[in-house]
Each structure stands twice: as structure tokens, then as C-alpha cells.
Image 1 (cartoon, rainbow, N blue to C red):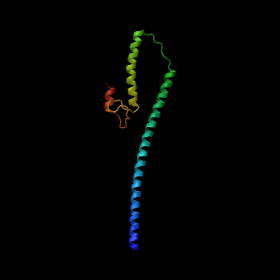
Image 2: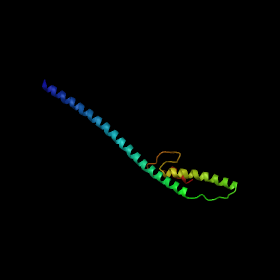
Image 3: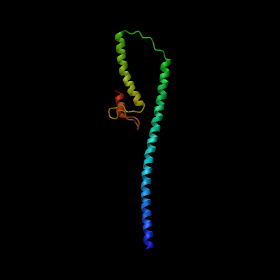
Image 4: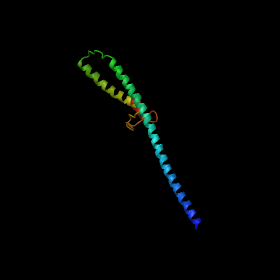
Length: 126
């Protein structure tokens, strides 16, 4: 009778060990996902700090540079403003691309993780 009892206890322990193993595997997967998210956020944070630092340097340089006196006629000023708006939009898209975001219609706004995107580059070269 005791032999059956010992075997029952061993079987119960085996079941518990298997459930612990399954729980450990689930926890390992959760830790792995958290570590990947943490690394992605650290990388993005570092990139954003560089961008912020660069933007701050540009603002300081712009504040130190006096605005030139411009004596263009009204129609010439309007044409210059229109061309600046087109150039400004292009510059903004180029800046977004260099900050690591897609500007193509396929992945617009998504973070670029694998280097250059041919769609974005072809859009910039238009």
C-alpha cells in the first residue's frame, strides 16, 4: 500500500514541476518582450535627444543671425513666399526622413528600423 502512495506522491510532484516549468517559460517570454521594448525605447529616446539638441543649436544660431533687409516689390515677395512654402514642405519631409521616419505613402509616419527606404528615397528625389 505504501508503494502506491509513494508513486502517487511522485506523480503529483512531476505534475507540479511541469506546471512550474510552463509558468517559468511564460515569465521568460514576458521578460524577453519587456527587454526588447526597453531597448527600442532607449534607442528612440537617444535619437530624439540628438534631434532636440540639434534643433536647439539651430534655434540659437537663428536667434544670433540678424534678418536681412529685403526690398522686393509686392509681387516678387508673394512669388518668393510661394516658393518658400514648397521648399519648406520638402525640407520638413527631408528632416522627418533623416530623423528616422518613413515619408513614403506605403509606411508614412512609421519608424524606420532597417536603414534607408527605397520608396522614401524615390519620393525625395522627385
